[in-house]
Image (cartoon, rainbow, N blue to C red; front, side, top):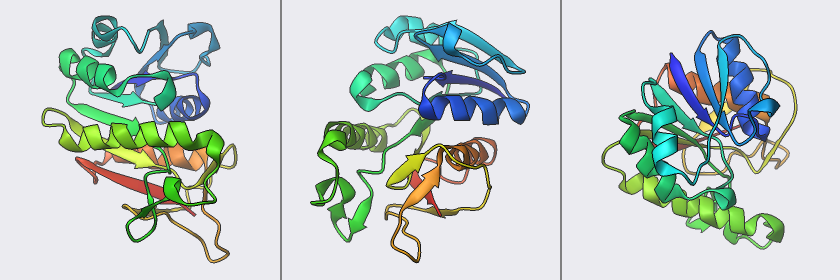
Amino acid sequence: MKVALIGASGFIGSRLLTELSARGHAVTAITRNPGKVAALPGVTAVKGDVFDKDGLAKLIAGHDAAISAVHFTASDPQILLAAVRQSGVKRYLVVGGAGSLEAAPGVKLSDTPQFPAVYLDEARKGGVFLDLLKQEQDLDWTCLSPSALIQPGERTGKFRLGTEQLLVDAKGNSSISAEDYAIALVDELEKPAHGRRRFTVGY
């Protein structure tokens, strides 16, 4: 597939780029600094600004799908959504956050006392983005929220999928490696199973 990846040099974006390239997809890696994009098969790095709706729409146009892997506090969901709509690309996958997942019935993880204050702004803005996606009429969107802890790790391919509830293992931990997160998102790209929905991944 031809995929436009916004935020390709970031923490999650770089793992997605590696996974997409390894599976033979042609990727336009959109980032503020193309020099930071890894030289991988099938990857073309281009400079893009997430606040430039028209410029971003031109970079996304002509692809089979667009993936957004940018920080919520460093972007505007309205501009991102408008750019994808304007591009004519219908399939839109979003790297979501864990904060909007339910830690208990009716209680978001970001509303629990133990949620780190340093991530609160990002989590709340991620929740706003998800709410906007749920109202979206034009795009075939999917949002993948990670577990509470996502960090560099191994690519195991062994994980669980969920929907609105935070996934927790037998020891009470909620985690996923960035590498396995990338597998789950690219799996969804190749074989859509969560159209117009959010889902989550964890061990």
